[in-house]
Length: 230
Image 1 (cartoon, rainbow, N blue to C red):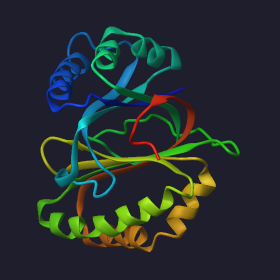
Image 2: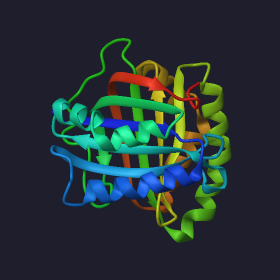
Image 3: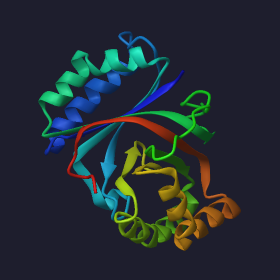
Image 4: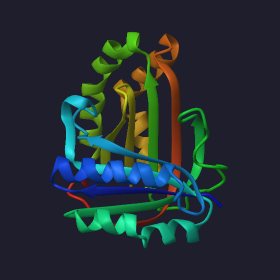
């Protein structure tokens, strides 16, 4: 069973986050790669007001990882690397989940394993999106973001618990993470968000993305706290 985790740390400073990001990347991709790790990306974040580099949040940093087992995920969470982030952070949130549906690729691979989970009634769900935007499509994509961000802001009173943008280098590798109180709350947002639906249709018709991924998860645990939560 593949387990996906999202860590969000609030360091309060860019220098601490950049230093730990470099250390984390070397650790996860090097010889000391944690046992049971399938996939990992450490990323900067952006506020949900625009999800763009213009609103980059240099005080919050995210780690998305997929693990071969719950035991591997928990062992990493108890390890020195997470401990270093925790020690330098004022906020710490960990979301543990299993994929319900995952379509597309991230860096040429399917990161989250077989999507076989089901959300039980009343169980929280989460969504990860990630796209590599073609340079020629950046202006059109950017224009769709403000109305979608406004729709998400209104959703905070309708079941949205957490929303932030995620970014990798080079520029143009963008993603989002949203956490919802239930699957019906997520479906209600999608059905009641015309700007979001229009952007999805336009991006596919216009071929905006060189690569894209959409994944929905059943959330098994949310631990800690972050000021970015609704």
